[in-house]
Amino acid sequence: MKYGEREIAEGQLITFPNPRVGRRYDIHITLPEFTCKCPFSGYPDFATIHVSYVPNERVVELKAIKLYINSYRDRYISHEESVNQILDDFVAACDPLEVTIKGDFTPRGNVHTVIEVRHQK
Image (cartoon, helix red, strand yellow):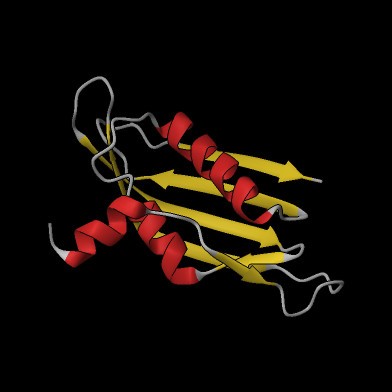
C-alpha cells in the first residue's frame, strides 16, 4: 500500500484548539473531488462537498478533512447517507456551534442531486 492510500484509509478528522474561542466566525470549506460508489449499481458518483461551520472549542484540520473525504472513494453509499454520515462524523469530531454540509452531485442519468443537512447547538 502506498503512503497516500494508507493516509486515506485512516481518514480521521483531526482537530486543534480554536484560536478564537468566544468569537463567532464562519469557516467555509469546498471539497470538489468527492467520490463514492452507488450502492445499487456500483457506478461511481462524483460531488463537490461544501462545509460551512461556526466553530466552538475545536477546529478541523484541513489536510485531515481532505483525507477523510477521500476515504469515501471506494465506499458503496447513497448520496443521502454519505452527506448525513459526513455531518455525523464532523459533529463528533469538533462539536461546532452550527454546521451545514452540502453535497452537490454531478448529474448522472439526467438527474442532479443536492443534499443539504444541518446541525445547530
